[in-house]
Amino acid sequence: MRGKVILEEAWALPRLEEKTKWWASLFSHEPEKHTQEIQDLTETRLAYADKHGVGYTILSYTAPGVQDIFDPKEAQALAVEINDYAAEKIKAHPDTLGSFATLSMHNPEEAAAELTRCVKEYGFLGALVNDTQRAGADGDDMIFYDGPEWDVFWKTVTDLDVPFYLHPRNPTGTIHEKLWKDRSWLIGPPLSFAHGVSLHLLGMVTNGVFDRHPKLQIIIGHLGEHIPFDLWRINHWFEDRKKLLNPGLDCKKTIREYFNENVWITTSGHFSTTTLNFCCNEVGSDRILFSVDYPFENFEDACGWFDNMEINTADRKKIGRENAKKLFKLGKYKDSETKVI
Ligand code: GRE
Image 1 (cartoon, rainbow, N blue to C red):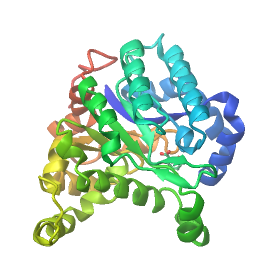
Image 2: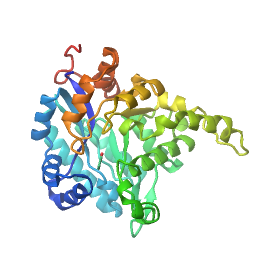
Image 3: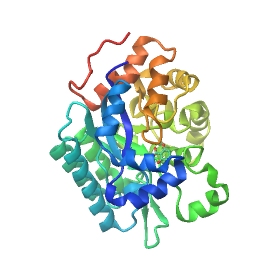
Image 4: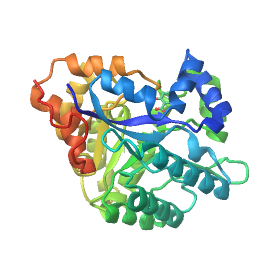
């Protein structure tokens, strides 16, 4: 299928190569290749995209990125540098490249202002944030965005009418020490990434963020960070138990309604037909978006799977590009109208 849209596609600043190499050493068996690929925003990745039928890529800054920087001033300066750099790089490629804003999440007003700048000045298509923001003098605090102090930020996101991608980062500080240090092979895609993001997203549900901001659109990757598998059980416990307690959980809608109205999932790094079919049943093909997760994954695996798996054409088209066109209000881009057979 040509004209596919992908949206969990990482890059890293060349000046931070040491940090990139450290991260690559945790996750890549080809660290040199990975480093070269992640530092390139245009050439290598656009060649892969063309070869594998991807028409439009929405770039985002890699994990842990700015969410790892616990000094608020340093984090803000880095976010601005990243956004300026991405804007400059994608300028010459409007029909193939877009970008998410990178945000320091120490301060809701500051994050809202930087998102507004990126959307209005640069035409960025939303924000991608790597889970909780590290904070505090030693970086051991974690800022979640599910409390009322973040309403000002979520109001800006919905006023701008752009989606927010909640991407994972690695566990740090006390959490790392107590949960993961002695089980370190489970850090990342095998378990910790999904743990972090599912806690954060379900925290937003139960703390009423979507009730206060019913138009808010959140994207999560990796076919939903384990949540779709548990929707029945979460729903059962919210509706049949927790809402009946005194005081009870008081979020207004059911978990399935939030998944229908506020949440999108992507196929980033999860190329299983069985799981995709399950997600089509459980959350519906209108809420699923194709993605690769390059360069942690490769185009060949992702696109080879997606283009050839057994699925009806309407769903392949929706998941491959039409849902993304709607969500991001994309105009024409490379191969955006190519026939899907
Ligand atoms: C990611 O950022 O998406 C990622 C990593 C490391 C391993 C896998 C992965 O940062 O998907």
